[in-house]
Each structure stands twice: as structure tokens, then as C-alpha cells.
Length: 230
Image (cartoon, rainbow, N blue to C red; front, top):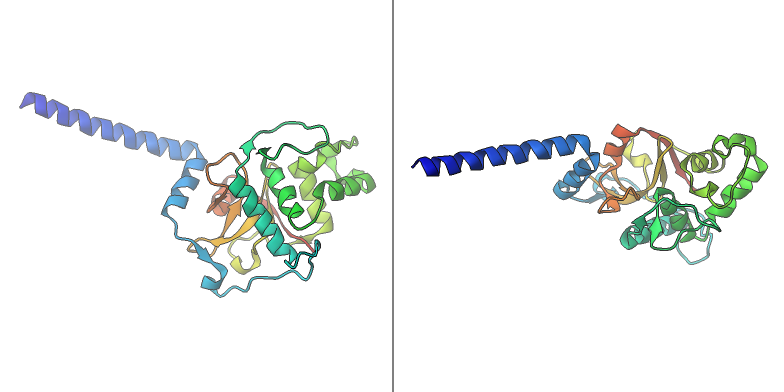
């Protein structure tokens, strides 16, 4: 009986240790919280909240698909490809298809709509270098378009600036670009959570690249920019 009691007590102690470890992990590593939300969340869409999806009047690459949809599809392709997270400097600027960071999601998504974000950013830096503090007066086409601070300046100057208030759910549309602080960037998904908050398509080396993470990332690194292509 004492042996059985000892085994039972040991199991209870082990369970307690596991619960404590998981709780500490969720507190320390926000990515685990994101995974928890993904597993527990039902997927909704704009129509579930009576939100009209905006269609761009521009079809830049003339493929019969409007720009916003093209950008969203490009971001989803990137999420499905799930390139290995690797921050590095590349001659010519572009990393291999199977490598990337958060900023690579953006230019690859825009490329699907026919845009060369690299060329657009390089040109704007050339003509307005004083606006790009991260460049420090020394443009480098091999990396400038892959730095979040530079992208924030570019979108702020050249595209449509929108609300950073997540409660205004109708103003967050698929294909929009969102910047967190000065270190992270992503694309707004067409998927939404139960509150109508959109999912985020991004690369932070997480298991799922399209996830219910917009609110949580905003808690840890507040949104500083929300943009839409003109």
C-alpha cells in the first residue's frame, strides 16, 4: 500500500511540475501563447462580421486579379513555402527562395502583384535620403529594402496610412501591411478570429506563418504603422 501511495504521490508531483513548466513557458515565450490561440481558435472571415472586402482599382501586373488580392495571395504562398528563418546579407539583395525574415514576406507578396519593392525603396532613398535615418547617409541596395525602419518610412511616405486601432476591425483589410515597433512587419490575412481581428501572415520563425497573432504581437511590440498600396 505504501508503494502504491508513493507512486500516486509521485505522479501528482510530476503533473504539478509539468503544469508549472508550461505556465512559465507561456509567460516567457509569447510564441507559445500564439500557438495556444491557433489551436483553440475557430477561423472566421469578413463576411461573418458584415465587413465588405475592398477590391483595388489597380491591377498592376495585368493578370486579371486586383492588387490587394494579388498581394494577399503572394503572402499566403510565402506562408505555405515556409522559408527557413535566416537573417543574412546577400549580394544583389535577394535571399534564396528557401530563406528569409519578416521583411522578405513583404517584397515577395508585392512581387506577386508585379511590384519590385526593392526598386521602389531604393529610388525613394536616393531622392529622399534624409528621411531614412536607418540608412545613415550611406545607401546599400543589398539590404535597405529588407530593413523594417526603411520600409516603414517608405510606406509612410508613398502609400496609404491607416488606423493602428485593432478595434476598428472593418479598417483592417486583406493585403494590408502592418509594422510593429521598428523590428517586425507582416501582411494582414483574410482570416479572422472570433472578435473579427485579422490573422497575421509573417515570418518570426514560428511553426505556422499565417496565424491568429495580430493582437498578441501588438501587446509585446505595439503597432506603429498600418498601410495599404494606393
